[in-house]
Amino acid sequence: MSFKISTAAVDQADLLIRQCEFPAMIDNPLRKIMFPRCCQATEGEVEQEILWTVQSLQQNLESGILEIRTVCLETGLPVGFAIWSLDQASQKQEHKDKADNSSKRCIRELPTTLDIQSWSQVSKLLRAERTRILRDLHNIWRLQAISVNPTYQRQGAASLLLDWGCRRADEHGYVSFVMASPAAVHLYAKFGYTAVGAVRTAQGTFTSMLRAAKSK
Image (cartoon, rainbow, N blue to C red; front, side, top):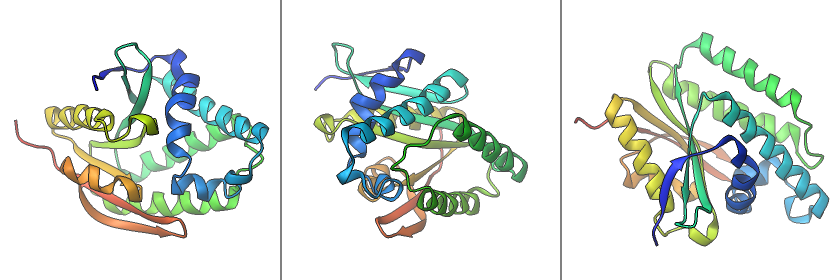
């Protein structure tokens, strides 16, 4: 199947979440932690969750700080997207990021089905693991998220996005980092990521992975 990659547009947030992220996250362990009642959620509750996620992506697109790429069919329909950031793992920057994220969360109305305590706990665990791994590193090319509609998974869409990200890291000499969900570890390993740690949860193990930049 033929795909093309492009920069995500600000007005694509709703489409990207409904077409790509939400279908891809149905069985994701992180979603099951955050929304333990997701299987019993009403249509209205699901819509509330979707809108909350759309608002988050909209803010990221409007900020212009993150690198967000989409992969589309020849018709232009997006079937997946990925989000990268260039991080500086200093304590000062970490505090700033946490403050910024808290501010953004306050602006958005939380879905009624969100388990705030579980969300907070797993976020702390993942953040602590990320800090442990990246403490002494700089210019970290961090893959924050990658979502592909299940209909187009295992057809090269995710690999196209990862290939773009890896080439970008190699071009600038960046160390790449991702906190991989259980299902994604094998794919990241194919692109040179190596497991360096893990966070175990009731819904599965998240693996912290690093990739060194390849010489030109």
